Image (cartoon, rainbow, N blue to C red; front, side, top):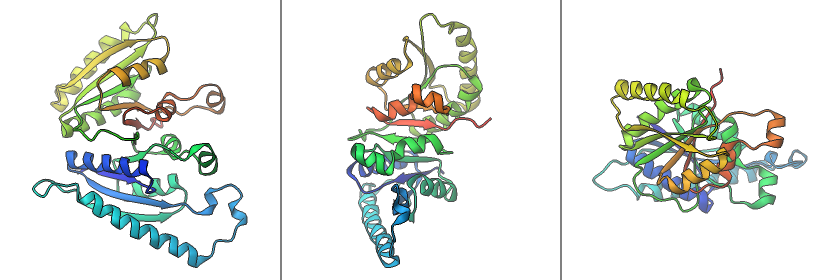
Length: 287
């Protein structure tokens, strides 16, 4: 059974993301861990100079636990009386959001972290950081980033976008997506975005054979290949998200060095910043 970790700070965006995650849990018959990270002043620059009274800190934890319990009841009410009802475990922990989520995901063996987009404005982003971006960079499990006002309709079509540079890198997340595809009864489209001049055709045969092999081994025939010709990957991704009639867009995040980050944003981070549909980000392979 899958376990979904739903991250919430009780903002409108995070609650909408949690509602989406709960619907996903009902579709996949998964367990749910509902988590709130109580942000301590250490997450704010120069906060180490401040004194944080123990009694006020305890009140913060208690308040979080109370609000989290109320939110759990709100999610429980979404489940039909005659259908599957996900088991919800509530977790409140103090610390940096990314650290707390990483620890909770590991402890509860979460298969995915579901979070909303950042909505605090430029000043808030400067003070406490863009948590979705940090999760993309550091999470060891896939992260599902949910935009504002997500559709709660059943998921029927998932596209895995790739530059088709590293077949070994792409095959594991594709295999993981097949698991999701089976549970959701959804179609998976492996989508290659490439320059028209790029010699992509030499990869298409290999990829087609690999997909056929995966389909046979996993008994999952609803996986297909599609190529989008575009000189810029970001433009191709934008076109795909707008015109592909997708429910989820999936990608692998690649870590970049300092110079690459200065001059070229990663595609996954750029997509997350301009999100139009849920984005599932797989961590990069460590080898």
